[in-house]
Length: 554
Image 1 (cartoon, one colour):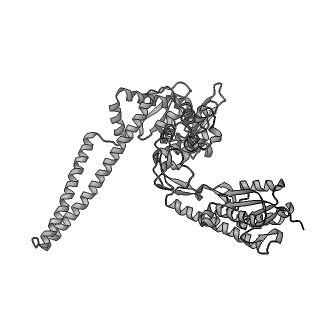
Image 2 (cartoon, helix red, strand yellow):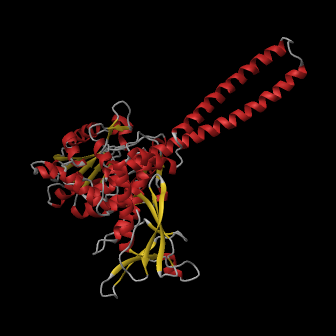
């Protein structure tokens, strides 16, 4: 009887997890076994199909799909693997191929090490072997996850390459360190956002200033994304997107944290990625050196949350999140009155709008009135900074609790004196114990002095700690005053308000309920709380009951 000709595919597979088991399952070992088997049994080898680094639970492997295509084209009618697990580790799919696809295509399948051959009829144990192979994959998946979680808790990062601003630490695996060549890009993005710019504006700035994108830098260093950048025009290097900027501005990596498990597979044998709820992620703090301070990061997140999409008249976004009701603390609602011949916009208390009288009051203020007042105050402080910076700095320091130099010196002198006295008392204790041991002092005098000096020690400790706290607050207040004044000087004399300017200088604006006097003049207090320094001035807006120009004292 004429023997059929078997055009054979030698299929080899090795997952990343299998590599831990050494040479017994390596690609080289599988190749040697299969080639020897084909030679001994007169099989005509058409090609080798190798999937190195692919899980057996995934049947969308590149060379596996190529092999199945060759089977469809009639080029292959025999498949040989080292064992069943090399073909796959998902028992339903294994049964599907061995009991339906291969018989239908008249393809012979051989698992060499297990002596399974469809031409000789598969043994009754094959379904059980496939099931055990799947259980092995499930158990391996669990072990890998446990190992990764242990690494994560030990502040290790597992990543293909470091994100913008960092590079892999050459001296420590799974660690990243700041990249001095690219960290300036991240710092520039955060600095621009810190002063109120949104992602769209930052994207324009980066593109206009020809700052290279993260993917371009990866292409230059490692050859990644060659399909995008090879032979691409130069402008492609600087083609930033809003999504890229937003991703950088939200990434806690830049404050030294690492967040794991933001995404996961549906199951160990289904590699489709899904987003996990935020509370199920694993946050590990202090895994590496931060590029951005926590204060800057929190400020950027706060500005991002406050920012609103601008409307057609382009007025709502500049005060978004800043204007609040002075009585209930709720944000003020922006609206436009279009019933007048000349429409105008205004703010009113959101809490009052939702609940009505008895809960709060309107706190109504026209947009143009608020705009003019805030602009006038910022212009005033900018002028004062130019006229007499030193005097303004002292005023701001005094406002935030930074006392004058003479008072600070007095506190430092007192602190030094108290610390010296504390040291003297400690020495007295030592000598006193020595005198008692040598019987140079009686028990009664020793007890009396002990109580006296212990009481003095307690008083000294309390006062020293109080002075240190006061001096620390003064130092912080002085630093805050310098920060605020530096921002004021940056904007010189503004001629208009922008969201960037307002968010850089102002923390919040409290609008009080207006009062109308006997003369019909409407008085309304508006408090501006500046960033770092709080409330610096408070004035009332004066205007007649009929909408008109506003007189703003400066």
